[in-house]
Amino acid sequence: MTLSALRWFKAALVMQLLLVAYWLTIQVVDISPWNDIVAGPAGDALRSRIAISALPLIALVAIFAFGLQTLGLLSVAGYGVYLAVQLWAWWKPYAWGANADQQAAYAAGFAKTLKVLPAYGTHLPPDAQHIVLHALALVTLLVTAMAVARMRHL
Image 1: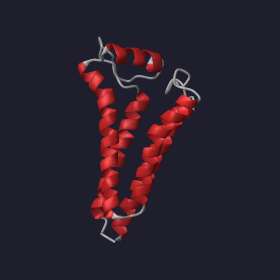
Image 2: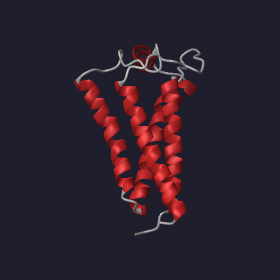
Image 3: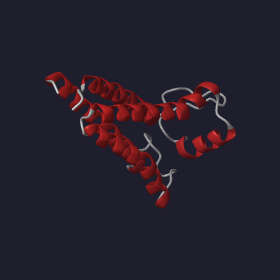
């Protein structure tokens, strides 16, 4: 790898680890009103949620860390899917309105969290913790894609 490629690679690794660390923090550390983990799952449900969400992110970091362009492309695709799912889950209900199940889940888990966007009718805004998560995921995706574009086949 060239020096420029190495810098992008390191930046991508830092962003990926930051994304994982942030996600784990908002899942297990009570920093109310940023998050409301009291309303969230506990015990086995929390462990399952962490396993379902954090392990794939950690796997993406691991496959990227090999430094191979092919594996890096898989990592970029994985972050793209992760971001798409996050945007679908949070921004679709805000833009087009939430159904009754989404409204109930939102009221139970996110009613006390910090909001920066207004709610109107059934349009429920992503809370601040998720806006930051989405921004981190987007920057991670872009930086990882730039790093992969600069990798050479080994």
